[in-house]
Length: 182
Image (cartoon, rainbow, N blue to C red; front, top):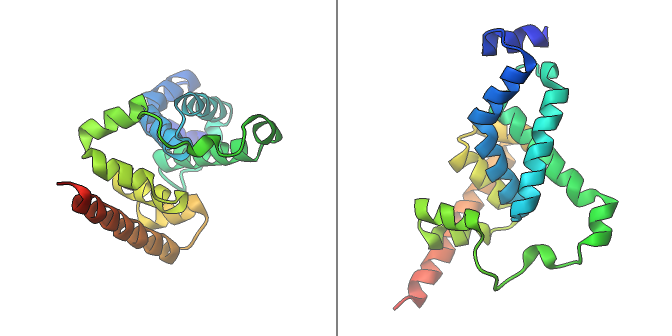
């Protein structure tokens, strides 16, 4: 039945063609989300690859309860969280390495800063992960409150609250930055 649903979405193409379409349509979104959560280019590359391997293995289990994009972002989020919980990661990565300060911006941060004001991007990246994630899913990926709630496993009220707090904090940070600029 899920296979039939996917066939209707993709015009009956084979598994490789379906995966190719998904990668073309949503690969950049998956990578950006992985990067946004991890802040590491190499890790985002690995997780993106793992997402599409997992999708290929379980392609016909997609039930259509959410959009394909939401499904892919949920897989991405789960793989990032699995990575953080892995014993290998806890043993190999020294505490504090993930939140280094004072290093130059990554290529992704430079690309995004060309799309939006650099100060805005820095303000968003400085938010706590829970607020940053909701803001990204809503503003960039255009997910509804219900989709975000389902993806994160929280209530819609929690999503609205986090989104409100994220916007307020970004505004506050931008006002502070504006006050420091001559």
